[in-house]
Amino acid sequence: MNPVSWPVAFVQARAGFVLLAPEMLLALFGLLTLLLDLALDEEQKSWNALPALLGLALSGCALVMVGFGAQTASAFGNAIVIGPFSGYFGLLALMLATLLILLCTHASGPASRQSGEGYALVLLATAGLTLLACANDLVVLFVAFETVSVSSYALANVGGADRSSLEGTLRFLFAGAFSTALLAYGFSLLYGLGGSTNLSVISARIEVLSQLSSAENSLLGMALAATGGAILLRIAGAPLHSGTPDIGERTPPAVAGFVSVAAKLACFTLLLRLLFSIFWRERYDWAILLMFAAVAAMAIGTLASLRQKNTKRLLAYSAIAQGGYVLLAIAASVNRDGSFNARGLGSAGYYLLAFVIFQIGAFATAIVLRERETAGENVASLNDLNGLNGLLRKHPVAGGSVIFLLLSCVGVPPTAGFIAKLEVVRVLFANQHGAVGWTAVLFAIPPIYPSFRIVRAMWTDGTGATERMPLSDAQVVALVVMVILTLLLGVLPAPFEHFAAQSLGVLVLR
Amino acid sequence: MSKEDRKKIPPGTIKEIGIAWTMPFELVVPMLAGGGIGYLIDRWSHTTPLFMLLLGFVGFGVGIRNMLKAVSTLDKTEKNGK
Image (cartoon, rainbow over all chains, first blue to last red; front, side, top):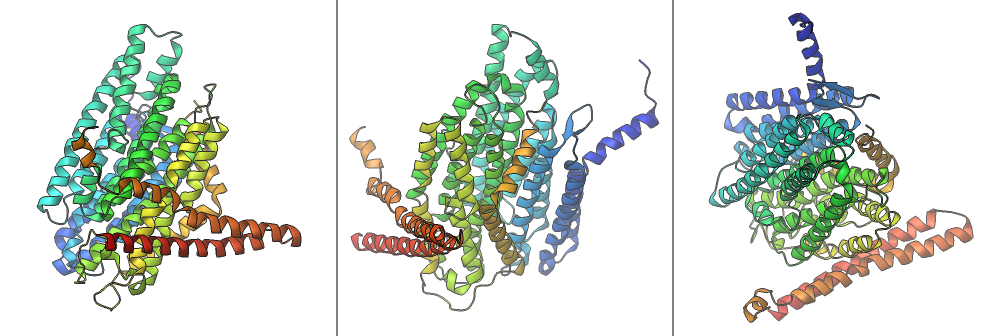
């Protein structure tokens, strides 16, 4: 074998790094934000948002340039694969981070709450999400997944640690550590089976073998159980959801929102990567298991949310139920004859797009509650629905936007949430999963009731100051943009569904 | 289920589950009615989808109002009950 000269190797490696430009820009601007935070006085801390937003914008441009080419590109010995799939999930991650940072620019309260650490951690978590979307190697998948996880653990305590948030962080850490151990175990089994950490090599070996031995079949089954269990634990999919709403209750609302959505996005990216490559042979098994997990998630998330008086706990249980619909869409991507159903995968992608927008929008309810506290309003209990009294009158734009996004969250037409649920149900019926389809319809109805309790709380005037509640321009812009996107996705869903189906469909074109 | 376990289920849970499954129809039925009537008018006057959307939105507004009234009545009943 002719040794490659170091200049050639250098150029080849540099070409690979170009494909990682979005991730590198996010990491760079995360570090810049940290450095800038050191240089700013307490009153100037709100400027931390600027490099964070700039980094997200530049990363978005780089992602569009490298991520949406007609052909897929690979680098680092096929450990990184750039294409429509990575571009789609990269865009979702960037959108999530941008909306969150805009919602975090407070109009009132100490500027020191807007610390550079928080923004830097959001950027680093987003870099982990985008890397996860393009990873084609077990090691890279693991590192990217843990980048998101560790950033989330640290984020849970930014802005001052009190006993409640420390407890929430510890519970979050323990649950995450357990799922990481399971994931590592599953990956080690896959390495033993494939003799490589590269997903393409492992899935090729499994496909080439006309018949796996019973020991290898058992290994594959155990790997599926371990990785599936780890991912379900992180998605907080029932029955492994225990503790997730408690974690959401004890962390600051913006953090709770980001962590719940980012964790689900990371898990679904990983799940799609693994199920449609290595575990495609086991598709009959995992499709059924996913349906059971989905129905359990919808049932537990929906029924538990009905009695919740605490806004953040209600939203956490709602997120568990939403995860169930995405699991159903993934399960419906396998037809009864074992062939691939592109529409099912497309509905999963569309649901995730709508989910990112309306879930962050729903958490804006809790963010607004926090603003009222820092504005000095005499609010009885921040986590109680009564804390929202008078919001619609005091800030019609924010109140109206939050109401609209809540309606999307529970699937009221003409919002994106309704179309997303409708598409999942249609795919299930088209795939002759009528019983599961009717179950999904059944559990789509109850969440409307608790959301209207929130809407009524905002509509009702309460006692307290009558002046307008301060919200920053960035927060109002974020809310309005989310409303416009939700309406656009709800009224003109076809182009977005087609885009999602095309982007995710490349997973199976191998 | 033992007596102790039965005590762990908060009172009114079953009633609340029942309300959660029936109340949303107060939102959906006016929308469907408005949209349906609008569709029939459009078919007669060949103006699809103008009246369907218009009356559908009117139905949506009526549905929202009905839901808010129903939730408000329920909350007042709960408070009086306590």
